[in-house]
Length: 411
Image (cartoon, rainbow, N blue to C red; front, side, top):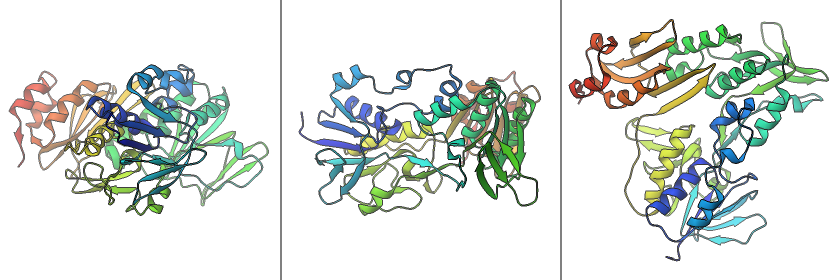
């Protein structure tokens, strides 16, 4: 072994991918993942879908690094442990209840914690969030048929929970401050399509609905508004995003601005200290600015890229964002960015919810939203930044891969 030690502060998706990448690329030193949850690294996406519904009951099925892989690759995972300090000068990692570790490289993969709302009253247990296995287990136990559920926030996770709760027989109301859910991600017209899918399946989706106060009473939860009557529910789920866990990084002197600020490959302002995943605000040449992305796909890409950086290699990942979701039996995907000019080409059956909507900016493809046409996303990745004849693009008899060869790249 090389004698070098790499430590990850955090033991989630990003840390797991980084550990796998380090071993694949020949690093033979010590790898130590330190996480504050009681589980080894696991997948979060099923928590709002299969795991929440009960279709997937085993926590072991979520595991990212099986025990036999850890043993074979000599990767250590410390669970239920909090990193309280990282010394920037020596890269000493101090962990509650464990001896300090002197690291040659430190990766902050601390993710984030759910944003919350103040909730006075006698029943705080009736207000839920969803980030961990334990959160999902508590919520699953509460989602019984006939229960009145209010979700605050119509992001991807909130809409997935709504779909799962309807499937379990609950009565669901979703409250969203914006006029259209997810308009900032998929564009207002496609956000309206998603809203229609939920309403058609029994979700009471209320947009432009800002909760002014949330409180519990003995029999439930009351959501109050400025200009409309209050709404009473049996339980509430708050899904308004996450706050990046930057406290230890900030105390170590790292640059922090709504996340840990890093370069394109995950390097922080301190040598041999890195950050990636939900917590990292990474410089993107594609976007021309620093961005922080909260998604599984980003965690995968940045975990692999930062492993290269930790080994002193180049390997920037700046691919377009790709999101996916499963709601009411539909697979929803989005790649790239929504058009700023409102140009859109529909391929397929919009009313039948079997289509791809291509976003164009200046005549070039900049993104695509699909329902039940995930295969179109793969071709769209190659069409991004290219000008395409829109009539041909909309024609389903045309193979999208043929367009990849024909399309003109925008310089």
